[in-house]
Length: 531
Image (cartoon, rainbow, N blue to C red; front, side, top):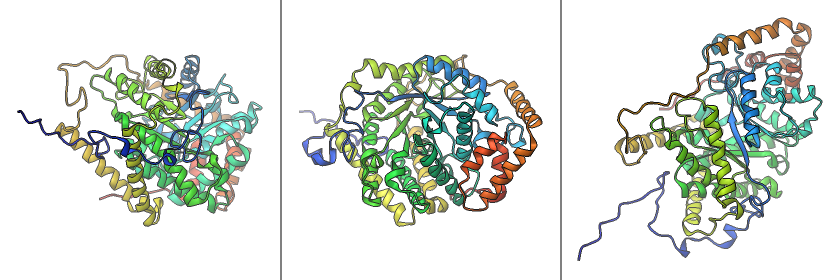
């Protein structure tokens, strides 16, 4: 009799054990799984799941000038997008105007260039701000961009209370995973909590932060590290808000999260279920939050950018579809799907449409939105949910025991762990242990790159530079100078800076001018070197 071949060891994408078979013993108690719409929200935030309302299809877009991006937004809305998500160029993200020498060569390249209220008016031309939910991926200059949005609403006669959307405003992850910081951590945290307080009183339907695990995952973190480092940052924000006099039972309702979805299907579904349960427990047990809405982990998902390949880009359509299905089965509140060509450039209009259609097919043709948490109770899913929770909680407690996320970031602890995970992943790809179709297996010789990729013309930068210089030449210098002086004076005290920023942008101060004034007060951050 032939002996069966020995089974090799299988592990998840995050290197957690994956058993050959799961059974009834893998299920936790019924109270841990819970019911949809009830604490600890493992099975979803709403009792009806997507039966009453689908997730928001929020396609991330922005490139070139405000006018070009406005055309893309209006096109996406015509195609069925239900929320906007704004990508800003690097100068806007780090507080430089388009004519600053530091901005040379980067204007409009990875997002839209926004220098002033004039640009904001163009960006949202013919888009009803009181009817469309807008998300803005912006951090170091988050308060300035929100001020521009509020100022635009005022000029249109729209009440601030009618605005809905999210501003990312998650500066801690910039220090560990993305790099678009300006100021040192302490004043940066002040700007975060100033925005919290302003939104609570003036823009009550706005999510004042989107605490991002996406960029942490993209930098090389595993799934449990993505959860742990995101929630460790979130605990830091909650403590900072409490210190600023805000009540977590109230401001907790406006906290939101942002996660990646990679291709290990079962692990990703479990990760989203774990995120809800773990955050609910953290808010209840560590901050005594009793308001169920303030216990809820509401999150946006973006399919995994680093999973996309420049080789055989059509394979990315399959990857994105798989990740879309995982996000839907995991119960996300909103979703962005990447374009097939994003490993090469910003997506073309056709790629953006196909990415949106992927969501629409899953939502309307697959049937998965018609049953609440359809994978709930699966032996494998429940076991994976528990394993992720245990590992993420271990990492969180480790960070908390050493002084919290801010201290860990300043020491370089979090950066080091992410780098080690990224290195291990790359070694697995290079050795062939981890198969990437079209990259280290199933390659094609003589493959030609697609010709229809989006290219940003150099004329974009010249036009934007001319635009911001023309604005400066025609504005009234008196109100502009007074508004910037008032902003600087408040920065030197403990007053909330967001109202002064709104006044400044209404006086036609630019993003770069406001950021420069604050640099003079707060200084600039220098990166922690990790060895």
